[in-house]
Image (tube, rainbow, N blue to C red; front, side, top):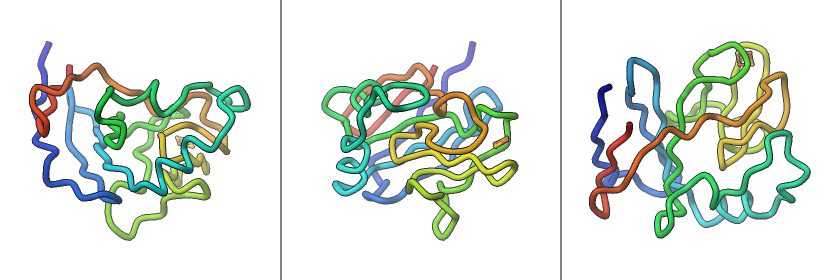
Length: 133
Ligand code: FES
């Protein structure tokens, strides 16, 4: 199985990059303090697919959200990773195919998708480099 190495050091808070992991889109997003606060301001138990931001990030890198860019409804690529794209009602990602809204932790908040955007297996191999897979 292949891995993908990415230098994420140049991603500014509020920005994301799109990459490819095993032929599927991968989003890496550096959250702003406001986006982190928004994610942490939600009661996890009220979520459709309960998980905290801490559950979905690595210790010491709680501002770096790494998810597959694949809607968990029927597999479209959500918007929100590129500048100017619609981030949806919860400020994260928006899937235009059938209107799923994901929050700043990539968690499903509204629309037909059943699950959060998938966090793939990955590790930081330095302060700024991740290896996915
Ligand atoms: Fe994303 Fe249906 S594929 S909402």
